[in-house]
Length: 329
Ligand code: KG4
Ligand code: ZN
Image 1 (cartoon, rainbow, N blue to C red):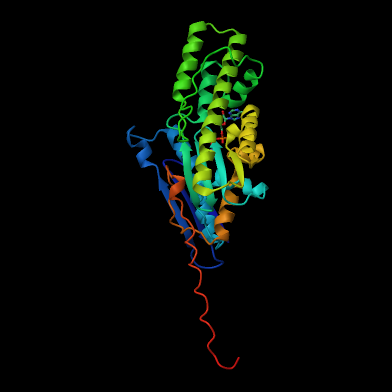
Image 2 (cartoon, helix red, strand yellow; image 1 turned 90 degrees about the horizontal axis):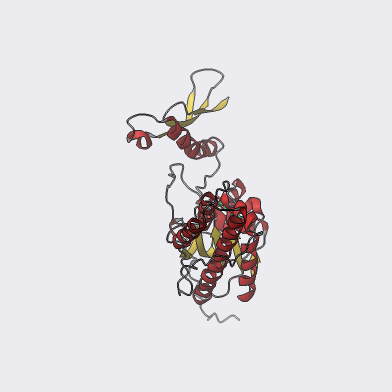
């Protein structure tokens, strides 16, 4: 009998696999404890809310290893961004290299995906992520969370030209984003006309969304230019992250792909937002190349894409066979 036990009473997240033979004492096959002391140290005691969150964050890692160990299966520690980057290949036949536009609540990146484990970041945000900007706009205007879908719903009914908002970074040769100035400008416009009527909220949302669309067009155009210069023609422009659900943004991505002579690939919404299938798929892509991890693989709070393990370089082509000098033919 082999049983997995999970312990989360206080400030340790622990899991173990124990074997109970028909006779004799038991045997520990795996016993993993992740301590939360650092999280609670500043408060001089265990804070239940912090403990609960830390358990949720740690439990997958702890159990994943136990399952791998007991079932004698390889473990792949998957980088979250890598999973977003590869998810398009789960549903579509997208060969490498392609250009990824990842826009979620925590990330805004333009990445050249050269192969499994081979990622070159072309652009990133210097401050807020695009999804975060949508969420903050929604909060400012008294709309619900998550803000993206609410802002989009209001925006379609509003006037996108009523408020003059900046397009930060427009025309810069690099492909980085900056959104905090846009956020501030929106707040100032809203304060000028407070209290806000429904129509004001709709127009603010529409003007904000139009600014974001323009920013994406400009920054991604720069990113695609860098891609062409450094890596040749991308097989596709791939969008990922919750923001890719936005219709106006999809439309501009479609236009950009067309302009640069490539196709737009957007995985279905349930694969664009965070999901388990993308983790499994990235694991499968790594497993196919033999890129497995040891059971002592550690979770990383910050894990840039450039730091994931990559496949070993291809061996140099074999030297051509020496000319046949034999005399028998
Ligand atoms: O990828 P995701 O589900 O979770 C992570 O952040 O990892 O992305 C969620 C983000 C939120 O910020 C949400 O407001 C945004 O995606 N989002 C949208 C839309 N739907 C979700 N932003 C703009 N328009 C939408 N329709
Ligand atoms: Zn994500």
